[in-house]
Length: 363
Ligand SMILES: Nc1ncnc2c1ncn2[C@@H]1O[C@H](COP(=O)(O)OP(=O)(O)OP(=O)(O)O)[C@@H](O)[C@H]1O
Image 1 (tube, rainbow, N blue to C red):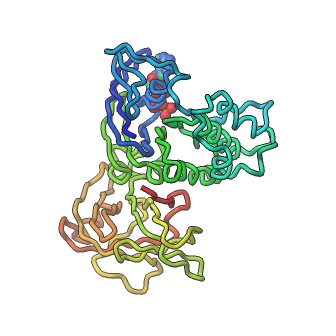
Image 2: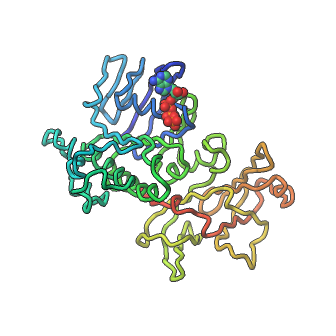
């Protein structure tokens, strides 16, 4: 289901003029703090009215200034997940989940409560009150409640920001399942590279209220000018198939015949995985290394070298597994005589890939 936005509005001195068109799936609105992500998602939700423009989901026009269409928020058939879960404290988990569902006309109750409870692992929590839930559990209930309103588009505004790392890891797979199993289109605000790498079907980059790029997770995360935390979070996204579980705790992935060893991934063999590999975790070598503890050695060819403002340089190489990025010093570029078209080996420790950077890919 395509998603088209072309709107302009002012909020105080802030001006948003955003235009993009994406074919559906999970779209991440990505940008630095203050770039206008929440403003844009609120305009889609109908909480702010633009001065002019158009917002369309599939065939449904939510807003069109020329035709005088401006559906009120409650008629837009959207689910909204906020940073904090915002559950009703006096209601049980089950009552919270069914809150919006109850008000839907019978013909619109397309989301099956049992399926959503199962998908989000909420079965054991149904009789509890929000005060008896962890932050991650609360957020799962909030996601369930939004899904049970049978939305045509799910809006999520930094839904993981209030959670610690362990809870983030708990929630991320559920968004993958919403994307891959329920196939509900999602507009997801984030400034975290891991969330972009794992979740995004498409990324819309916002900067000072303007869309500066619409692209793939891999394309956006490889650009230090775009990634909010700068070069520290720049990297590549690899798509690989889970091939073998080894008895020593490693999982073997394959990409076009290339082997990749990572800490155990508890998924069925054959699952297609997405991995974010940070550029600073890659070492380059002119020769295939011997006697090295790192398990992953990927042959490639250098396609670009970008010098940074400091002592660093970003080297892009094409491997059988797709483009990879390595962040090295400019001194190493000189010492190793790195240049475009040169054959090179990229070396990566198995443990370099953090659990939050490994997800599934059902696209
Ligand atoms: N009601 C308002 N009146 C005036 N200015 C506002 C209002 N709401 C937001 N702004 C300004 O609009 C700009 C964009 O804010 P917005 O919340 O959309 O950014 P964001 O990209 O979501 O940021 P963050 O990642 O920090 O949440 C900011 O400069 C903010 O100060």
